Amino acid sequence: MGQEAFSLEGKTALITGGGTGIGLGIAKEFINAKAKVIITGRREDVLKNACEALGENAHYVVADLSLLDTIPALVTDIESEFGSINILVNNAGIHLKKWAQETTDEEFLKIIQTNLLSVFALTREVAKGMLERKSGSIILISSMAGLFGIDRVSAYGTSKTALIGLMNNLVTEYSRDNVRINCIAPGWITSDMFLNAINQDQERKQKITNRIALPDFGKPEDIGNAAVYLSSQAGRYVTGVVLPVDGGASVNF
Image (cartoon, rainbow, N blue to C red; front, side, top):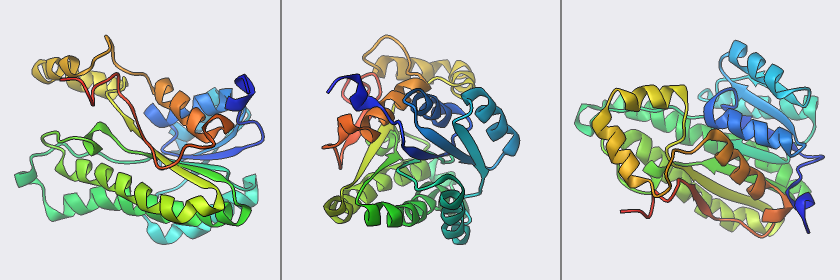
């Protein structure tokens, strides 16, 4: 089959939260695989700068996915302008680092609203076209916090664990129409925000470093390459999988 099995030429991908970090890393690798890419986010300046860096096959749409009632029209508008969505990457999410006993109901609900409810709503709307065409790939970005317990992220970890449950159930409904759905669980991936945070907490940095089996942190492009595989012909028989991209952190003790 060769390298062409990893090509996304002729495919249109929608990547939420695609302007920075992991989302931008995924967008870069999709562009390298010759996909047409649409990124979404709330900050137009960030999205515009990202698209300028990504090149002519990248486009952006400003959207707040926590506003669930706007999602059906958003999908309709995107497909009207850019064509059918062949690949959906649910990457957008928010984080909360706080002890469970200090987390309010409102804070917990806000995490669930953005990280779970909006993912379900967008997946449902995009899947309508995929199911009709009997073809499509959906990726949910989970987390190490969705695989094992981590202190001070009870709301975030719950939302990421729930994404795995959502995937398991949608596999039973979508597979008959050749729509695949998988999760990627990133480990500790470098970004300015991450590096600044851990460099201010040396004890936590050492704990993380000890957990990772490989000798360095991951890069956004590592998640991008995994997403290309899952979205391409090379991954055509892969569905219902949680793929840790974590340098061995999920199994290293």
